[in-house]
Length: 519
Image: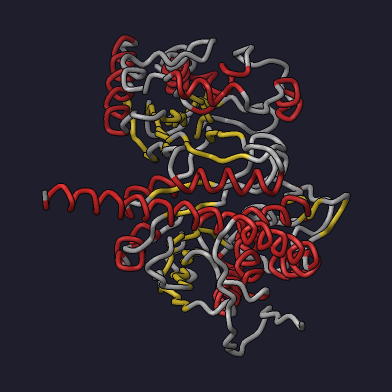
């Protein structure tokens, strides 16, 4: 029988879908069909990724704004070929430093299917990328997808064009096989994630009806801890501070004024050194008070995680860590706060020598937030502590402490149905159970979706730990791209089964309740 491909097709086709009852045999046959189709069409999937990578959709470069808008429009048309209804939402204008205004790319809201008996899954992704130039250290042109030893190199390959296309390809596989898609699907795709997702919260708030029937939100915008498949159930938050010390209105010569004034840099260095000790322990009083205690159930999640300490040292090119055991390292990466000092603005940092006393310096540091920590409380603790330390210096200089970024941590329930469905999908594709991991970095989107939509959120990475997102020579392996497509396809199927079971149990409870009322 001739198969119908919808790739790049602008016409509308009406196809008869084969509705299969999800018995064990039928389900296994469907999975085999899905895998065979995806394997047979993997070169097509790689070719389309190559076409997407070729568009330099750097959201930080105003000169590439037309390319970015083009990328969003291509994505919208691609989703439309699946039969989805697609809306491009205007996100307004960006004001540049020179006062010029340029248009933000639109956001995409799309939906496919509205069967009230099915689960509805909303997928978030983005198609903008970080800046990239060959002269920055890339081995090849970053916007020409290059395959070397099974790896697909190119800017956006893993962050986030590859995962977005893998989700689309999983859906197209069902359509091409004329199989019923087991779940209703929605998309929210943006083009400014790499510059902070301006306007995203407003879009979610203003389109509440779009999310009203969503059961689950899936984000695939991070990577695994190792080469082993993983599911992410938590991220740390971030409180980023500026601490400014000003001694005068202009810089001074150290030969003329050194030794007779209170120098701003000296005060600042003292303040920064008072924040954390040599073991990494934060010295701000009360900072650990709200950290959630680790439970026995959580401890068990660390036992089977695939994590090689020596390999991690080699990847980071450091000689030693603050902790020696796997569990201690992972817990301090993921679920305890940390304080990092990032730099000093205003102090001399160029090559050579310069004997200047800066009139104003700004120290920059951040505290990664653990679960239960609250940004307003941390802000108050930091300001109070630094003001007390500064007062002991008896310095006439002016101190100012400001919170620049306040992003909350996020933690999901690993027993939610979408995690169970994803675990089963990964086992069917890879033959192993996934590691349940957290991410020590901050991914505000998970918390934003959870808070604003009140829906269950899951992070499902398909990229490897060595993919180098944001770095030179970013990549995704061909295997992870194709196997990730299979995971998404089977995830739809497994989630539909769990959703049906959940509905059946709910109906049974209602029946029992009504029977009790009647008696």
